Length: 90
Image 1: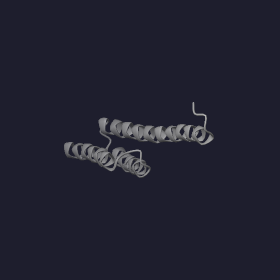
Image 2: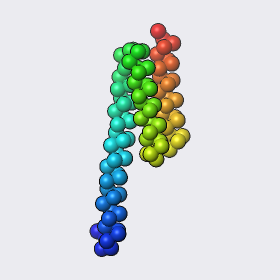
Image 3: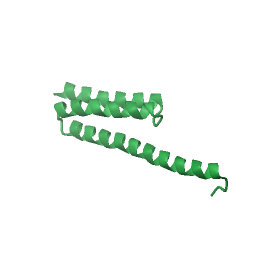
Image 4: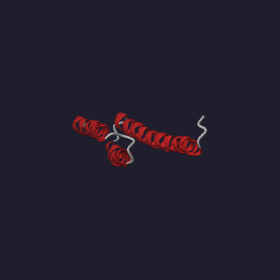
């Protein structure tokens, strides 16, 4: 534990920021799970709706610095590819 006042403050702030970032990352993961469940159940309408919401969450996480730009792009591409495959199958 630091002795310097400013460093004590940084420890507290770092913990708060970590909790916020963890919550945002968890929100993205939960959205992806819901989307993938819609894909598994072959519900195209629900999957299209959830895709927009999930992409929005991923983009917000990217702009907040939680995900690297390439990581966010890769996640979005994979989700879009799943929906395209589902549409072709039907």
